[in-house]
Amino acid sequence: METKDERDARLAAALRENLRRRKAQAREVKDAAAEEGDATDVT
Image 1: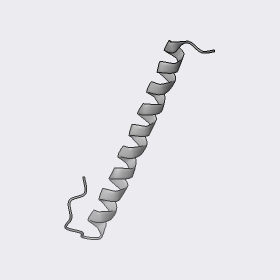
Image 2: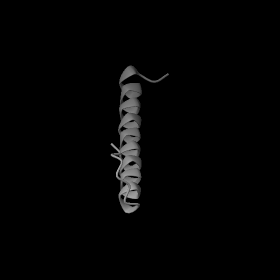
Image 3: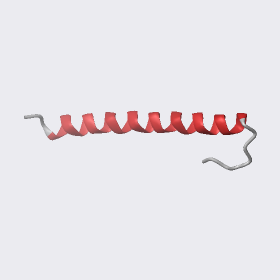
Image 4: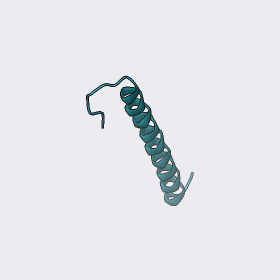
């Protein structure tokens, strides 16, 4: 069984990767909207 520290480190790494992925996805959506000339604000 792993220690609490190992579990916390694994969770922190997963959360960082998830945040990176969501930010990249948000940038793609924003860029696609800008290319279409869409006037809606995508944040």
